[in-house]
Each structure stands twice: as structure tokens, then as C-alpha cells.
Image 1 (tube, one colour):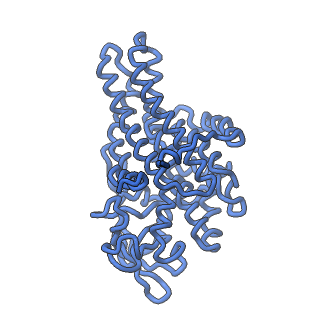
Image 2: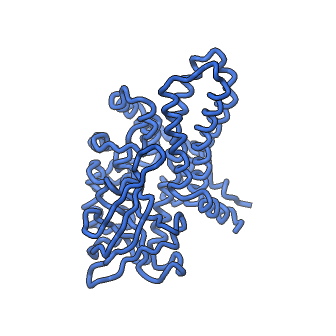
Image 3: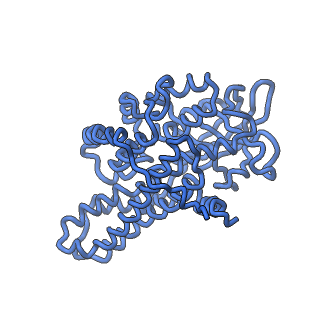
Length: 385
């Protein structure tokens, strides 16, 4: 009997993609010099427009997009290598992250030629930033129950409603919003559409939400009869559910679902290297690294599916669920290890990094879909519901 696990065929990163790794490492050594671990631990929540523009100048944003749209014309494996190195170094990628990972591929596949010509080159240069308008109050990750609505007004649309947990909306130029264009929440997936929303338009109110660390990269976004032009619609009216599920496959399967705590793990390993009793921690470290290695192999297998033009949504959900669990376990395991060894106090930088990751890690199981929603998707993929 074929099972979901049969979809994870062992794959390898081809040498053509691995060839980029050395160049990226050299660039990051130069750019990231002297940045402390507690800063690098922010990585894909770290917003640095200058860094994103520097990546764009090297052709490292939109790496998989066609060259005639400003992209690099590379495959998904090459982007995997790039992303893996960026996250391992703790690079501040938030400015371009969503546009590169999700918005640009969505526009490429479902947008009009005019939309592609306008948005894609700007994204690839690191000059235009996007956020995702999915979650809503009283809806959470149950996207089919969204209430934000766009109604026709002549050739235009009027958008009203609210989105929440919208990462970096306050620093983004555009949002791709999933909204209802017909029916009601009881109609679930039917009647949903996606729109390109210029966040400078009148009628939009963006309110940052501070997290436990004091950072404020999440936002509430309110729409009060925001007038959108006809060409703000992405793809086909009413086809938003299928489009957003294709988009989420890009969000849920990449290295960022494994490496959110990697800078902390590296800092702990450096701490262990200076301990005379480091061997006492080998089992704990080995288990974490073994789980990470398996998840990396699974992520590479999904990357192979993406490179083949497939949309492995269920497999991506499994990686995201298991990866989030590992990312949240890493600070807990390290905290327990430090507490169990009071004779070897860590340096201040390790403690600051542990404090930050411990405070922010509850959000790991919210972004990209809650654990409960993901497990429902996995159960359907396994034929259990």
C-alpha cells in the first residue's frame, strides 16, 4: 500500500547547485562579520533592506524565476543551497523573504503578463517587499472561514475587513490577500480570491503587535472600503483556495522550517567545545542533530518534487509540523543542559541568544499554519479522515 512517506524519495543536491555554496559563504563572512549570535538568531525575522539589495545585486533573489523576468533561471536545489547558507549564518533576510519565497512564484504562475513585468524585476532587485494576508481574528489558520471581502464597484473592487499576524506589513509595499469575493464563511473554500493590495492606499490601517521579545514584526491590518483596480486580482476569481495552497507548499517545506534555532544550537556547540565534560552532553546533542539531518533529507526530497513542477502540499505540511517541533525543542533542550551543569556557566552571549529564542519560539507553531491544522492535512494525506 502506498503511504505518504513513499512521497519522500531520497534525493541529493546536484553538484551544479552545490557550486554556489562557497560563493555564498564568502559573501556572508564579509557581510556578517562581528554580528553577535543574539542578533543573528533573528535571521528570517531580521529586516535589513541594504542586505536584501546586496543579495539582489548578486542575482540571489528570485533565483528560480526566469531570466526574462529578472530572475536567475536556476532550479529549486540552487535556491535550497542559498537559503540554507543564509539561515545557517543568521543573515537578516526578512525584507525580501516573503516576496522571494512565495509572492514572486505566485505571480509568475497565476499573474497576468502585466503583473509579472511590473512586480517580478523589482522583487528580484530587492526593491519591493511583500507580506501575506491570510489569517484573521476568529479564523486563525482556518483559511476557509475568512470574512474579509472584496465587492465589485464598477471596474474596481472595494476591500473591507481585517487581517492579523501579518509579518512586516508595516514595512512592505504590497500584500497578497486571500479574501472572499462571493458567498459567506459557510461556503468554505468556494468564493475565495487573491488580490495584490498596495499598502499605501487610503483606507488601510496597519498596527504592529509586539511579541515577548519586544520586537514588533507581526501586525493587524484593517481595510475600510479600500479601492482596488481591476488588475489587482491575481489569477482567477474564485480560485483563491487552489492558488493559496500552491503558495503554502513553498512556505512550509524549505530549510527555514528546520533552522529557526540553528544559531542558538551553534552557540551551544561552541560552549560545549570548551568544557572538559562535553562528552556528558553528546547524547542530547546527537539526538538533535539526528532529527535535523532527517528533516533536511525530507526537505531536499520535497525540493526535488518542486523542481519537477509538482505541488507537494501534504508533504510540506509534514515537514513544517516536524520541523517546528524540533525548532521548539532546541531551546528547551539547551536550557535543560545548561541548568544541569551549573559548574560550567555559559557566556552572556549564549544566554542572550537562548533568552531570545525561548521567548520567540511559541510563534514557530503559528506561522505557516498551526500544528492542529497541519495535522489535519497530514491525516487526510494518510487517508485517516
